[in-house]
Image (cartoon, rainbow, N blue to C red; front, side, top):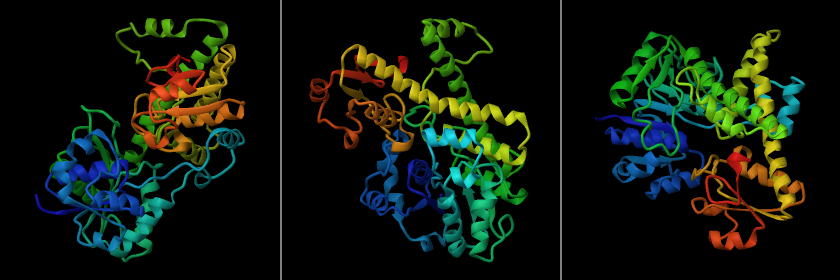
Length: 408
């Protein structure tokens, strides 16, 4: 298939899109402001190590090129925006801001990457191009942040001279069964013409199953509902687990008992709901509801779930401290550094549960190190034997340990 696809952002989402587009026969140009990302891609090395990317890299890399320059987007028929919008606040500061109900959406979330992408695209993109945002954002955000940026630096009118759709990313890192090629995608657009162009691109050009919704805001809201549901349910079982520990009830036996129900129950396991999506998406949904229905009591569930999730991380630190002091341990090793158990992805310091636990335990007077064979750049040791010999206590995170963090 002929045609050029431009992907704005060479990170986890963007490179999955680029690889899949290349496999479908498209010429792909990846635009990223990080020169290291560009150098890696152009030297034949994937900038992320997801299963789908790594396993299909040899077959796709000759059709993918990277650049820091937006003018190379000019001749693209389709543009997928896949930039990050990171949270600005975490932990106790996040809890304090939420409980005092202060701050605007922009005080919590950095929308600058998507706004800059919009302005830069407006300078170069041609009339008739389809622009698809895969950036998870609050309802109305695609037009307010991306669309307005495009219009501010061009003569284009989104939904008219340019087609604009939103199809929030759905990627499960490390999953060998469900990947970008077969996970159904929700899609909404700014007007009928945009929706038609978006469905043709995702369903016919990329071969991805599509679930059409009425407009942009419905597509935007769908993603927030997905992840808020997960955070709320994880927070529920974490909260019950914390109290069960206090009164010496076997929580996991009770959970397994509940799981025998063949209908109406989905098993969630306790833990800090970190990673790049759950907290941020739930936070955006809460702030959107707060700003549009400030007196509604129905928004409070989301706020309390976010607060309790942050407090649960402190609870995990207290549990680890209790075990360490009982065993006379001063040096604690975390065996596993992924943002979830056995994951090869560190993601970032702010949203990595292990990294945050390490920092919290350091404030409590412990010497803390980590080792993960799949994340050597963040490990303090060359191998597990060296790490094991250093430690008084090993906390396993999907790996071998004296205690298992997932059951702590």
